[in-house]
Image (cartoon, rainbow, N blue to C red):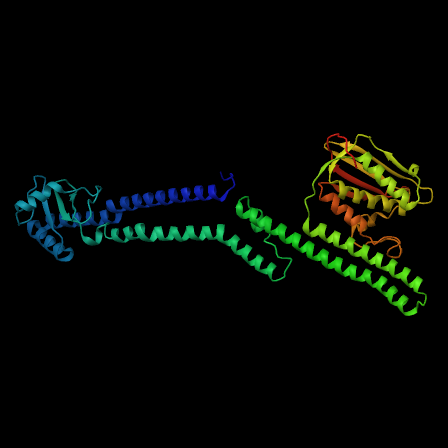
Length: 451
């Protein structure tokens, strides 16, 4: 069933309201037109009354002769039947009424009554001022309010529906088609290489399917632009980083005469380039593919013991310098391999920047349905303005040679891996303290987990 904000309901309600508006407007206008055409206007009543006063004046001044002259002139001018009668329906002129005319006197109307059905010739009467007689006449065609009725019927039955249909089409175009035109235009721009193409708030703020489509398009464009820019930068930095070992290889091949030393140099530089390429490919894979890692409950203590064992072997540290200050039952819900790699990168980075006899601590607290872990070293820390820079690919704040101090990819890989598991990784460096790496990971059920 469509949601409340669906276009389905909006179209149903909109069309229903439009139909009601159309019918209501048509009925209202039709009634107004009928009312205006069913009775005489004030000017027509005044003109008919004036005719009656002229007839009365002619009858009083000249009698039947004057009345005959008035009736004759009026008939020649208006071409309508007209008589003057007394209160007994007897003709006041010299011409007596025929039976047909006498019958017509039974169907006369006052000036304030309705004109009658279309096609007929309504007959009205106007009493003389003293009530001794009345002027009876057919309504002249020029005073008939029904003259424009065919034109109004054409307007109500043809012009008005056509105008309302055009209005409905315009509204539907602006409401439905215009957003699709914007989407088409921006999609064409995006396909042409304009990574900044967005549909914008004009479409994205809508709460229906078109709004969802616009937001999805903008999200897709943002992700595409970020991926392309990120990979271009990664490729540029990778090519730059590869120049150094390649240059050393060229120098060694040209100047080194001892085959054993040259072989050692080749092994070292090849290892550096292999590690660099593998880390770059992994970072690009995490950013572009965004894999869905299989997650499981992981006991952090067991994972830490494994990482400490490897770190002590690699760096020559004693395990007493790597402190676990966390609840031994701390369990997170994550992917074992990627979490281990991320923590290993963080731990290796902390050891690299620790002073002689320095220590590294892993602590944390439970925050609602997450564990907030904190890995702290006793190094010099970094300036606050570089706290985000260190997570960028190939970012190194020291002058270490590639391969000795790292390539600047470990923290980028760690942040991407943590984010893909529903977590978050950020850094802090309070004054007088070492670098603090904070991890926020979903909590898992306490369970025995063999690492």
